[in-house]
Image 1 (tube, rainbow, N blue to C red):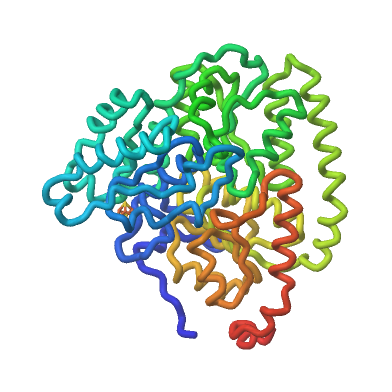
Image 2: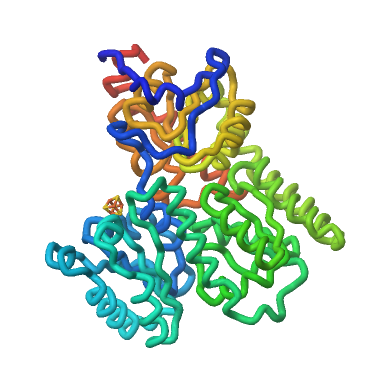
Length: 452
Ligand code: SF4
């Protein structure tokens, strides 16, 4: 294979620990021509809001923007499943010339009459930003007509990075808060922010908190409900799991309702335990919560630890590459892989901040490649150079792994099993083990070339 060269302007966004000393360039729009792995602003909004299962999600734009449906990111619901339906105003040439406002209003009227949702979200896409439809006033008009919140999501794809989409989603969620009375909520109560219930994780985590005596008022947005979000201002603490997407909302709620927030991760033994202990410590006046937490952590770890140790025997020394959305997930994955005896040789994220990368540099081993907003060629180059045995990422990283002839583990949208919590750690370890140890990789071209 010919050497893969890095674009000159991208070099500052790549760092090899132990070899280089520069500040990692991040938190910027993607470089034109670099074919970033990042999704657009609209996608950022959609991944955050779509799991709200009793709302209509209407994509105002050409049909292509709506192509990324529930089938790709199947957030689970224990009740209504409106979020599984994909609605679009399907703007075409005539609408672009004459404007799409009438079409939007008609679509909203029809959808609300037909499905009786608790709320409707209207996502603005690139073309809507260009032609200047007044989405705000259409939403206001329909909301008054139908008596439900109709919320514009300003997510025009071109107007920034995926992070701007998260921000637009946070603004939309914020509009839903304080719409219901907050009576009857326990003093020891939390909102879980940034857990999307892709494989049923929200249910596992809610059960843990229930077992330690903490009430979960709302999950934003996994298995989400409009009315629960409406009561979320009554919780005592916001627990932010996907920090990249939801810290902004936590700050808005802190400012308006005085609810403090902590950042946690539910992936891996260490971080899952810390997420429970940190909440227990917050409610320190209730000693029972800490006692119950200690018991829960001990019981859950005892259940999975022998199996983890068994898999560790074969996985020790194997190499993993990670490319994920936010750095908090990267931190947890590095720790979880270390529990399995594996070395992380590459780690990259789509939305890391300078502070996040500073921590990441400290956490990584010498020789690890750290990348911000990578493209497929960069990922391929370092996966080959570092001899990774496994690539962990999302839907857009899977083909890279398979083309290179190495195992892939989905830690993002397409998976069907929960990877959070203690049982999730065991699922993750099994996935990693089955993938890395599969004999099929001995038959792939890369393996032949490398003589392995
Ligand atoms: S919003 Fe824009 S960038 Fe995003 S999918 Fe639609 S056209 Fe593409």
